[in-house]
Image (tube, rainbow, N blue to C red):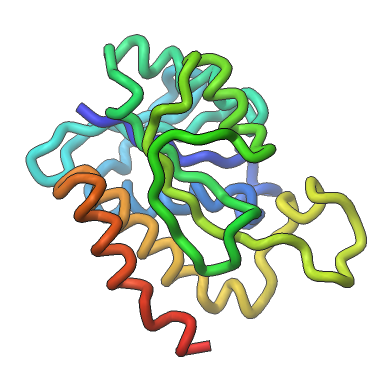
Length: 197
């Protein structure tokens, strides 16, 4: 069993925010693998199914980002999962836009959703799919919170489907072929992106 968590903020006003890209990846995964029957549980929306031969539970916390652990920890506890059986998909300020990285463990780097999950689980040793949103450009007026809670701009939206699909496929690869092979597959899948711009 794997627990796959997409992080975001609930509500229509947040659905196109940079901070909700984890929800977008979770929705793409649900659509691609028939996990579309999302029901309220663990202070989130949950669906169960399979990816390949692996049983999975998909979770979209509905607690708002800074309380994500209040949804993830009860789900992990009920399912009796070790941290390494969890995959968290989240936005990452410290990665440029269109950059996707896989990682196990590490700090929260100021990400309130990760901070909450780490605090509630008592460990950071889960798999992360880090979807780069980049830092605000030089002319941006506002705080970091304003940036992550703003919508993707027009040029980003033109590329968003590709970023979400590659992130979704990275989750699937972690489940099907393991972390090391998934990292290699992700690098191959996205290697030409920089040259396309």
